[in-house]
Image (tube, rainbow, N blue to C red; front, side):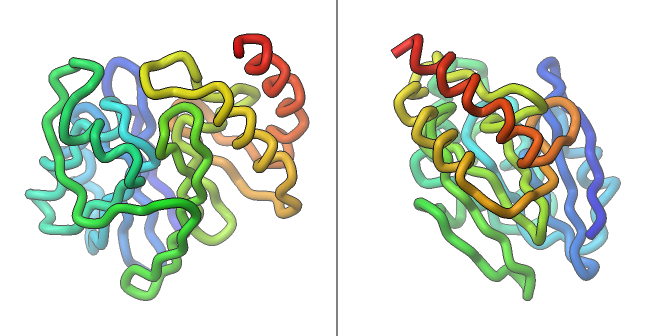
Length: 201
């Protein structure tokens, strides 16, 4: 598996191109991501969104139109793609497929697993490919996604952190912002973050 990373836009949102067996999967094409994506894919299969915030989905439709490939998005976050609830002027996009809960898909022979960890957004998910988690804005290096946005939920964030803390396998984490880390490393700080979130409830 090969992973290309490019931070995009004012929030330096990581856009990923993940290549497995010569097949390219584009994760979270953010602000002005289209040119970089087009310059770096050879055999594009799908666009995958970890969640619906504008800085992760800005170039969805542009990339989709250019490459003629389907878009997959967590079902609970579709309204962010179609309605621009944060009023950022986000170009609208329409998913071809919506994902609800934890679900494994086989796309062109490659297993892609969405794991649902709501809190940052209702549909917030990590995308697992082999032993790698693309964790969006759920987990960062020594930190977690904000839970004070419209449609965020501190209660759901606590449940998601508790769920993630019990996973026995280790994974390499590539987050929506910042540097890569591992699930095992982040599990060590999850008790701290669970308490921080609980204080705000």
